[in-house]
Length: 231
Image 1 (cartoon, one colour):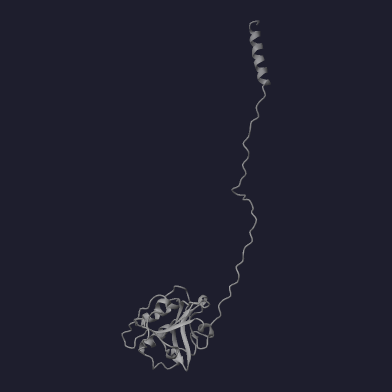
Image 2: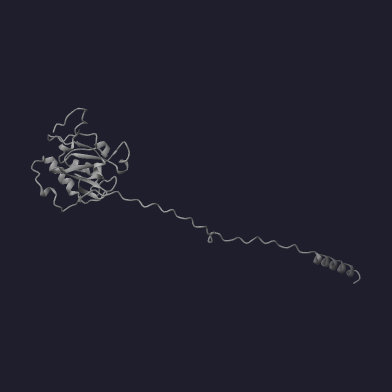
């Protein structure tokens, strides 16, 4: 027993010393905030409202199907067969919508309608109104007749010094100085009276005749300066 007593005392001393040692505090990792589902609210920026765009003025008069000026209601006996056919094709498209770049058969832009109509009578026109304006012979208003092409500047270029061709239509009827044009505009394929229209007078650039007198239906080359029309 005497031999064991020093050993017991030694073990007790070690245990007591260990108990007196201060335990180091355990550092816990900070709790992460869940940002995946709770986004910080940001101040709403004021939305800049675009200014209302005033639509361009409409032409004086628009005519659509089932009116009193279609081919069935006036004498076309003086027109050549290919011109009659051209006007009949263009007339059959009345009321179809305008879509930029469309060449038919469900919608047309201005040059697309002309290209489509002339293709039916065997003539291949360029794709754009500007390119079409280099064909045929220039004609004066007193010589306009059905089938002639009329070229106009775009609405945005009317105020500039140099007007660029951006629209084309076809003379539909001339009667006692009254000129009706068939074309595709924002209102779709329609017939418009341009006789006293300030809207079109400001934009008008030139008129050209591209249909040959004979039956070959070949597109005439650009007219030379000083040359006269063959019609």
